[in-house]
Image (tube, rainbow, N blue to C red):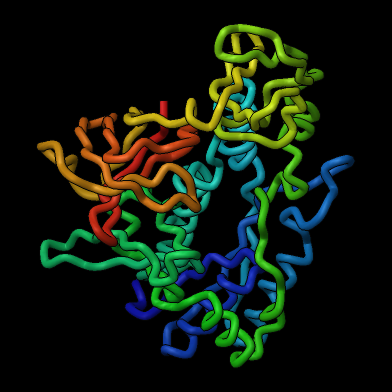
Length: 354
């Protein structure tokens, strides 16, 4: 029989998920901590912190402090198939993947909700800086976190209503500084632990090196060209290049150059001026709408990167795609990244830039 106050908390070992468990425990919830074992770094990938055993230990120690159970589930096979393999494939196709979205949609939250139900839990909680708002018809709106600099609603646009209506985000109303102080007040063993800055499975940020080690063969070199097709230099492989990138191009010229396009078939990277980066419209595919697909075009704000300030646009919706025409041109619109649609604080939906 379902316990109405039992909640499964996804615990990565970081301070935010640990605080989520502590706050819910303070509020009287029957907390169960679960850590997903997603990845093992080996050989040259052993840099920094990458789903390290120490992270699982931090989650376990937090649960011991709170006096609640803690479980570790092995999801490495699913993570490899649904996150890492597509990440490599997308890079080799000249696009910029957003693996955290894929992880939430296809590995973490669905699996955790299955486990939550098996434990008789009515709720699933994470340490994301996001919020939910329940409607009278039983549906749920996904809202931005109060700390706009830390807001993580961008990564959650694809969570289905069947899961979203059971989710709790205890940190959604907090500023990051308030969360850190609350973790210290609670005496959490990892309260001072630094936030992770890179992908959990590429902690050194060397995407090209990671792809080369895991794609079954060496990277293939190619040309760096300008918009007229003039060869400006060479690159060692297209993986890791992203639209808007400036660093690491090593091409001569009086003005800075930026990546405009990555042409996988010819293995060419096209570069140009900052002005050439600006686009007025994008198309997104693989779209998920938070509730129902809107029936008419509407005014919204569209976010094209996790740290991008949502830009005003007119959105023309479709069941599986949408177009967004911006009021002001936007730069660094990278194919493969998520484009997430907001109306005020509310997430309407999102998809992947094509």
